[in-house]
Image 1 (tube, protein in one colour):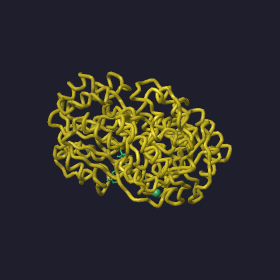
Image 2: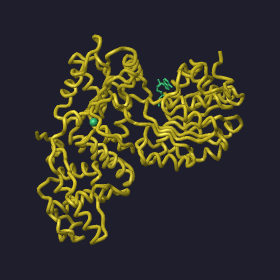
Image 3: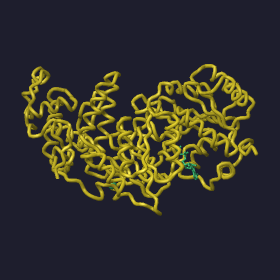
Amino acid sequence: PRLGRNRSGEDPRAVLKDVFGYDEFRGDQAAIVAQVVAGSDAIVLMPTGGGKSITYQVPALVREGTGLVVSPLIALMHDQVDALTANGVNAAYLNSTQSAAERAGVEQAYLAGDLDVLYVAPERLSAPATTALLQRGRLSVIAIDEAHCVSQWGHDFRPDYLALGDLGQRFPGVPRMALTATATRATHREITERLHLERAAQFVASFDRPNIQYRIEPKVDPRRQLLQFIRSQPIVDGQAPAGIVYALSRKSVEQTAEYLRGQGIDALPYHAGLDAGIRARNQSRFLREEGVVMVATIAFGMGIDKPDVRFVAHIDLPKSVEGYYQETGRAGRDGEPAVAWMAYGLGDVVQQRRLIDQSPGERAYKQRLGQHLDAMLALCETVACRRQNLLAYFGQESGPCGNCDTCLTPADTFDGLVPAQKLLSTIVRLQRERNQAFGAGHLIDILRGASTERIRQQKHDTLSTYGLGADLSDQDWRSVIRQLLAGGVLAAQGEYGVLVPGERAGDVLRGEAQVPLRRDVLGKGGGAARVRK
Ligand code: ADP
Ligand code: ZN
């Protein structure tokens, strides 16, 4: 039966039940659907697993015409179309994997008004012929999935997304939606501006995943720590937990999988360099069997919907908080307790800074990567609640969660008031007396009394704070600065990341604030992690 067709004008909840088999809308879904069915635009920021698809699929059915979904993930498109078809919805896609004949068939179906939902890749949509084709038929709604790809400063930029800004002009009167699970304030703003959704209703769901416990520990012997962590996970009904272990390099993926197998854990490798057949087999074992641990690069996981993943472990530092959140978000989608565990060391920082330095690209781009990394480090180094830090990054306020490592076992800290004051007064003096602002590197040089050419040229050795911070190493200062950034004592500005006083700076300068800093992440040159307990 063609359940999906001829649904126009029906009650969205009836469609939800009849077509998708769900009794109720969840969270903001009902409000979003109502908005779009009424013909208005919407921006939907909802974490992975929140149920974004329903919010455009239901309007696509309820409104007259075909719902157009822009999606960058071709593999995912295929799955979505299969799932919709299984529900009796007439769905199809247009992308580069199809033959000309297949494409022509889909185009015909669209023009005949036979499609409920049509997925397209963004590069296809930017071809004038596609626009012309779509204009000859009728669209009910345009949904731009993974909308954060429009953000040039984000972690997932796709140039084709920039061309989606004029969809409103190309298809006047068709409500547009932008959906993403990446929702920093900056990305949100860029989505609004670049996709011209200034008048769209905004739906911002909570990004909290209360059932996930966040744990980050200093890296000493990562494989053994990982093994210990996995072995400490509860066995339920005789079944070892399923999990994902993320590593940065293919080599590390293979070695770690082999090591775990040697220790009796059912671990499989997954990375883009593996034979496609092996990859498919490993993925299907992970999805179908119980208790499989997938050791993978970040190539694994997009679109994987396995509800009972009990842990996500990182043995290398993710490049950004967005990435960390997405990856850890694959744990506990069933709402049952799950753990996000990570081992993190200064070696990671050194390695990633080097990767950034060596990466091709403009200075501003590298600066941005550096800021992403800094935010990730701030999360690693916070003495406060991990969840609070994570949610704050996404612009959401919360109290301490009671269910992360720092809440459960407060970190070993020292009083950072004096170093913070030294740094702030350097920044303030430079600003007031010379109208200058600098990034971390130069400020540290001043505090440590370095004699660089820049310092001599600028006569910064005449500042009263010159050399006042020589008791801390360069690495220590970087850790202090990252933590002060994390705590709002400092803020980084502009493409060069110059440091300025943060919202809490006044209290610190007056000595009215406490500045607890983590000790366990302070390091001594050389890139090795040092654990002082
Ligand atoms: P997202 O795209 O936001 O990551 P999905 O749209 O894939 O999330 O939905 C996540 C899961 O939640 C899917 O398994 C989906 O079937 C389920 N889901 C979505 N909406 C509902 C609902 N109203 N009731 C029950 N389950 C739902
Ligand atoms: Zn907490």
